[in-house]
Image 1 (cartoon, rainbow, N blue to C red):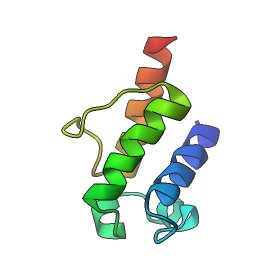
Image 2 (image 1 turned 60 degrees about the vertical axis):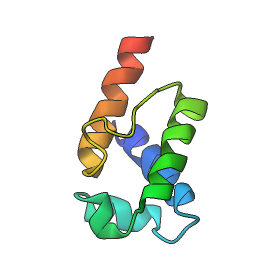
Image 3 (image 1 turned 90 degrees about the horizontal axis):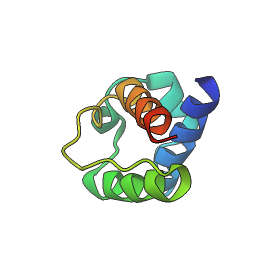
Image 4 (image 1 turned 45 degrees about the vertical axis):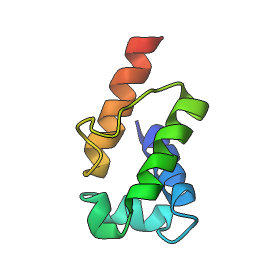
Length: 82
């Protein structure tokens, strides 16, 4: 799952236009909001997850506040959709 974790961290960083780096996300884990990931970045991330990984998530889906929960949710949905 480390490959997926790294990829999702990069996607989160891209969604924030680099304001939060993948390294910060990986080191910080935990709350994305506490790292500075705002609502617009979350919307961009939802689109990126769908476009790049084929994983569809709703804005109110559980797991968007915690990075590790988000990675687990993406992993579960990616496996389920295969």
